[in-house]
Structures are given as C-alpha cells and as structure tokens.
Length: 203
Image (cartoon, rainbow, N blue to C red; front, top):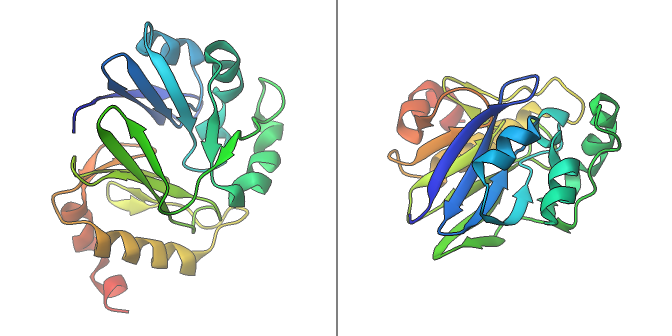
C-alpha cells in the first residue's frame, strides 16, 4: 500500500470519512458532513473521486458542496438510489447528490499504483459496498461491519439475511490480518471480528 489514510470524524452521527492520499492525488470515502474539515485535509491535492459506501445521509451529506468545489465525480452502487432520495429530506444542504457513475462488484478504482476493489455487500442497504486493497490488506467496510458489531438491518432497505450473507462473504474472502476501517467507530481486523460470528459462519 503506497497511500496514506486520513480518518476524519464528520457530520451529526460522527461518520468516519476517509481521505486516501497518494502523492498529489486523493480519493474521498463517505464524506458525511463538515466539508470544510475535509477540504482542509485534501488541500493542494487533486481528488479523483468521491465514493459513498451507501446512500444514507450521514455518509453523503457533504457530497454536493465537495462536488461543486472540487469538480469530481461521485460514485456509488445503483441499488441505493432510492435510499439516497429517501434520506434527502435530512440533507439541509439541499437536494441529495446525484451519482455520476455507478460501481458494482469487481470494479477497480486506482490511486497511484494501488487498486481498490468494489465488493457488493447488501444488508444494511441494498446497495452497500465495501472497498478493499488486496496488497495493502485493508477493507473499508462502511456500515456493514464495525468493531464488535454489524450494521443495522431495521431501516428501510435493510435485510438481515442479506447482511448475514455479506458478512459470510467478507469473512471467507479476507484473511485474519486484513485491517477493517468501518463507517463508524474504531478500526479492527477481520480476525478480531470473526470470533464473534462462529454460529453465523457455520450456517
């Protein structure tokens, strides 16, 4: 992994916004508010894209202003369009952001010589995604997997069975030493979280 990761706690729900930086380029993941803080973190850099792990307002709140100021595309999964529009009523910055490009499982987003792969992980929302770097052994899990917990499935579009399937997929794909950067809370590892899900993995 040849980029630096800046984690910013932003917005009304203390969302983790990640700025991935390689040389003079950057990618922003889940800008859920505090656009001024995010702009300061990437000052002097060329931002290639803004990526939403899902469409809940607390992960996209700063997207409209960042798109205007940075003139960059906003990427997310098409299955969360309805969620994005539904939560638009919470967005005091105006209309919900419109994606410029849709991403799906297997897509690759490059930053320098590093590659972020897209993994579709529905459950929290229909279009939830994770982003992972094989070489760097990291995964940005959005609201699918947290330290000691997994994402809520009782909101609109949530599905417990799909969430369990997504968790099983994550635990089967990634080794224990993969570092997990969640949408809220502290970092963890696949190995640390896997021990909580013995019954789930045996289903």
